[in-house]
Image 1: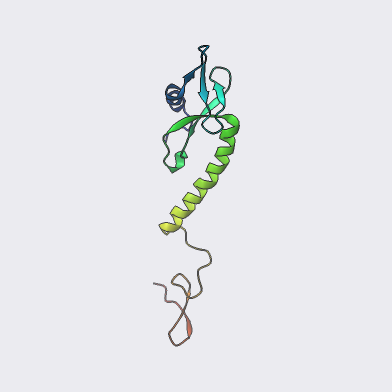
Image 2: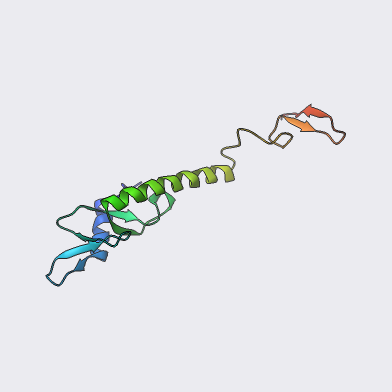
Length: 120
């Protein structure tokens, strides 16, 4: 697993997204708020547009305040994706199964009688 926001990611992001002003100054453009970031004067980060945990590889420059806000949203999305994945593959089962359902310890017969399920 590679380190997030590594030097390689920042270099690739800088080389593909740098812009030059009329005065010759090099700057980057925050992909969220469209703020000009002077590359030599302000700190910036390389942001995975799709979160790295969800398979994102494409990076764009982002200013620090926007990155903090986006990270909060990404953490929520990553947690939900993991929950959905675990439920889909049966890794995590419901802690409250539906009464009489196949994951319940009780079952209801056709005649209406409720009995304990045989666990094999």
